[in-house]
Image 1 (cartoon, rainbow, N blue to C red):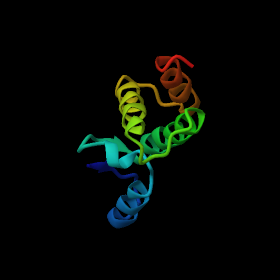
Image 2: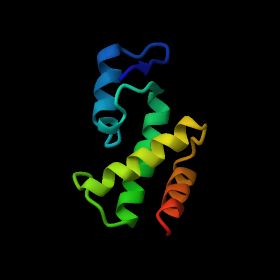
Image 3: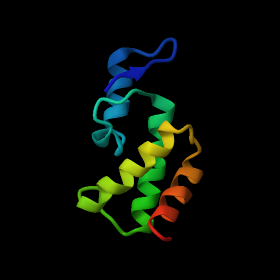
Length: 91
């Protein structure tokens, strides 16, 4: 995973913050800046809550993959990411 740092952010601090976000384990080397990872993580947490999924459950991977796909297409708003993801799952 490569992160794009903003000016003045130490590489280790950036890496540590990103590693603590729940969606990070599903990124598989994809490049996103910290703000986008934060948006994806917020959407991931909210969508998993709505679906009553724990992050460790197999279904959580499908949620993460959909959120990542939407972010790759330019969706950045966490609420919109959540809504669009849940719509894909019929909610």
